[in-house]
Length: 285
Image: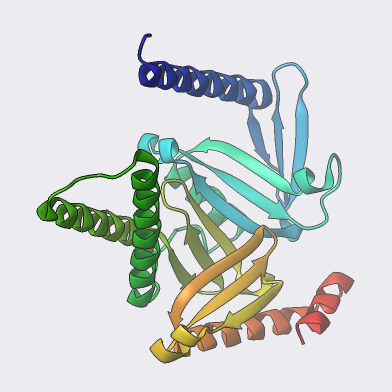
């Protein structure tokens, strides 16, 4: 095309389609003929187009289960489960600990989680963090948008707008920042269901981590100067799949949840014969 913008747009579209096609081919190659077998204390999956892979999930070593939905997966009503286990064998160490169950609906995912951990399969309604976090997100997003617009104006040269035009631009930026902050605040949530904790993160693509309270490796309670004035705190949890952050919880709630997590961990690790659990208990103390 003669227009550079049209040429760039078409080029980006071709690249996106090519990457999508490669992703489909890779998934077909890896998960063709996928079968999941229930063998009591073990879950066994077999898949592969030419080279068949077999992977075993030991329920006694299961630490965290993640229910993951990409943006397109949320539209299609599909997601996948990632089961993180401790001390898995075979293949690369990091990859062998991840047991992937692809292409399942929410009902199928909940049924499988219930099979892995009885009583924790149904994903409960999630609690929101403090509304103070939404205002913080709005300010951060507004600052980022304003900085981007300022850079564009500086690159394009002097822009002559009437006073009402600048006011309309400022109102538009504030509205966009408010909408983005609202969506990000709603996407973050947590819930305690018996002895199980659910933590959801992500905006367009969302990831919900499900794990027993006793499977927390470590935790950290943080408060900035602003958080102390507002009576909120941030709780950081280290689990088998990485760090989970619950920002801007009401301080009494954050401390009560931290105490509950520590009590669950210590009650299990002190009575466990496994050395790694005893060492983890000593490290937390």
